[in-house]
Length: 315
Image 1: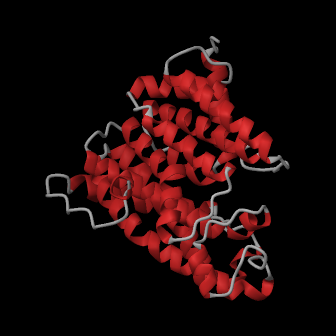
Image 2: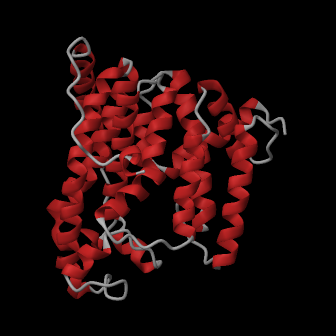
C-alpha cells in the first residue's frame, strides 16, 4: 500500500491527540523530525494495544474471547514482521512502523519484544513476584523507551538501559493508577506474593473494604519505580536539548501521577487520576531548566547505573 503522506500525518496526529494526553504535551517539545518519528512509533504502539484490548484509542473496551485475542495477536505479529522487512502493509499504523524503523535503524528485536508483552496479556500471565512484574514492564514499556532513544540518536548501551528504566518506571506508575480498572477486566499486575501478604485476591481486589490494603501495595510499587526514574533522569544528559526537554517533561508528568495517587490515599481511585493542564505547563517550564542543567553536565563523568533489574541480567 502506498499511503499518501498527508493521510499518514493525519492518522498519527489524531492517534496522539486522542490516545495519550500525558505524552502529547511532552511530544510537542521535540524538534519537528524527532516529533514526527515519535508520533509514528506511538501510533503503531497504540494500535497494537487497542487491538489486543478491544479498544479505540485506549477507550470503549469491547468484550473478546480468548480465541479472538489470540488471532489478533497472530495478525499483529505477522503485520509487524512485514513492516520490519520493509514489505507493503495495509494499515497506516504498520506503515508508520515501517517508516520509523527504517529511518532510525531500530533493531527488529524491540518491536517484537513489545509484541511479546502483548502476548503476556493474551495468555493471561500471572505475575507472582516483583521480578515478574518488572519483566512485563520491560516488554510493554521498557522497549518503547529504547526505541524512542534510537529515534533521538542514542546508541550506547548504558543510555539505552536508562531509556528502558524510564519505560519501566512509567509502566509501574500506570499499573498503580489503573489497578481498579484493570482488575474489573480480570487483569492484575500487582505481584500476587504481595497481595497474599494482605489477604488480597483477584476476587476481592476491587472491594471498597480493601482499598487501604490495595493502596499500601500501590505505595510499595511506586517506591520501586523511584530508582528507575532516577536512573532515567541521569540518561537525559545524553540527549539533544529539545529531546532532553521533552523527556524530562514526560518524566515529570508520569511521576506526578504517582505522587497524586499517594497523596490521595485509598480514595484516589474514586476518580480518574490525571494531571491538570496547568500542572503540565508547570512541568514544561521546570523541565526546560532541568534539561538545560542535564545537558550542560554532559562533560562530567556519568554515574554508574545502580544495580537495578534489567532484561539482560534477568535472561
